[in-house]
Length: 219
Ligand code: DC
Image (cartoon, rainbow, N blue to C red; front, top):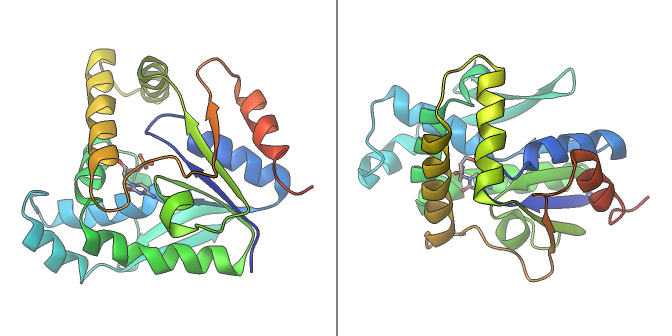
């Protein structure tokens, strides 16, 4: 059985940045579960499926084979044998992932994949329902959050840093909508596990957050 660290929280809280650094420091594998939902989202987008058409999503999910591989220590996502890692971070993909993640058949498709990864090795796994649903027995559970304004600003800086044009207000609206969608869905909603530590990163540096979480893990 692997040593499991679960980091959940809303979009833009810094989960992936923190989880990656923590994994490196501790020598654990970093598993970005959002990338799996995004991988399925690409499958739906490529088939021009409307997220509201639940029947079509359920049919399409049966034909999707999502896999995670590690190449030079970096997580790569494969969809039906093709490496789609480069396409994962697009805004359209994020919206489709959030809209379809509420469908139980979509979540079921990814549940065992995530559990198997955590059973085989020491992992830092980030997502929305890792501490509450995927790994309820994780040794360390973190609920990482930050204010909507802080999260929107971080996302804006990330996108403009990559040369993409974007608008701060639209990003803020998008984040609010994503929060609402992730927190109010019936199946495995985003919420803090009772035994999770709450970390609000709004006024913390990345190093401070990593140090805080690292101190909770086995040495
Ligand atoms: O973390 P992210 O932005 O890459 O995730 C994209 C979407 O996938 C997110 O809006 C909700 C969904 N998701 C989920 O429902 N459960 C997870 N464990 C991870 C992501």
